[in-house]
Image (cartoon, rainbow, N blue to C red; front, side, top):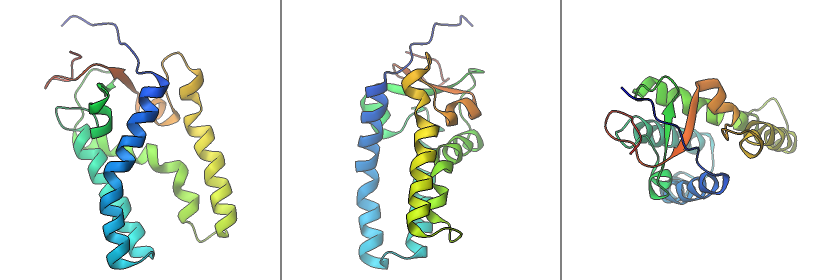
Length: 157
């Protein structure tokens, strides 16, 4: 198989894909809040829905979320293997990790929010400065966000 040069997705493409995915996920979260309120159960169900969304989208032939797909970018593993469910879930968990302090009862809400804000900056700022535009979650999972669409075998089109 011929290895092609990867074209890394731009910073704005990644940001707007994130915003589009936030909009996609907003409706089910509003439904949960309207029916269950804003308690622990809503937070758990929201996390599970987000995890399922990201995992199923990434492990599909798309190798991207809806927002990424609309902007013609997808996620690749550096070993060029397609995502299976476990690898896609692993990447979502790595993506979600910096937001954990906001859910912790170990901190006051203000400290949890401040700690989460600092971790999010630390976690995602490398996208702005690295040549491959990788966040910590990409580095941990050895993935890259690239332009184009994935075919069913995970290759770039």
